[in-house]
Picture 1 (cartoon, one colour):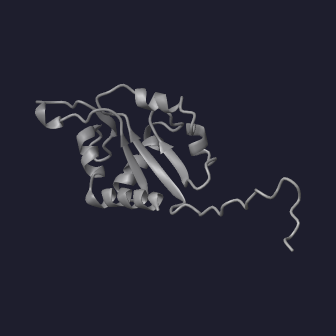
Picture 2: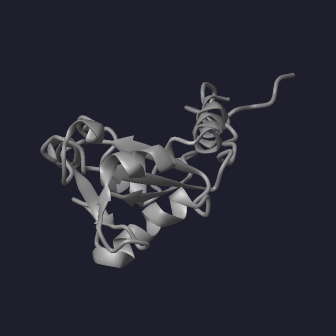
Picture 3: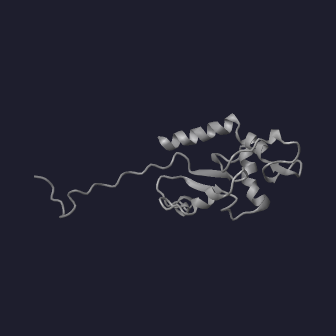
Length: 155
């Protein structure tokens, strides 16, 4: 004889077992120093499904802890803010995802100065040239880390 099931529970199933994320933390290093406005950053604040608050506060099951480093939305300023970018460049921020908001300027077509910059180059004290920063981030090692993170998320 079948086991008696309380009324209303015959169709209920056990909740699915949630797997832990493949990575516990991920840093999103977001550059807005390209040739654009900060419209993409601002539009993220209006997202609802999910909201940026849900993402960074860990309210979405199965998503790793997200550390968002965006100059428009960050609490930190100056060197405290740029530390995350320098750490990513040196391979100390693992894993991270690089987001580039706006067009990447070709710094090789001007005679002097720069089109876009973010932060200060600690070696020269000059504004951080965007194309130099982009080149540092686009090493094959860092791209492989981003691909590994993406593949882990898709599994």
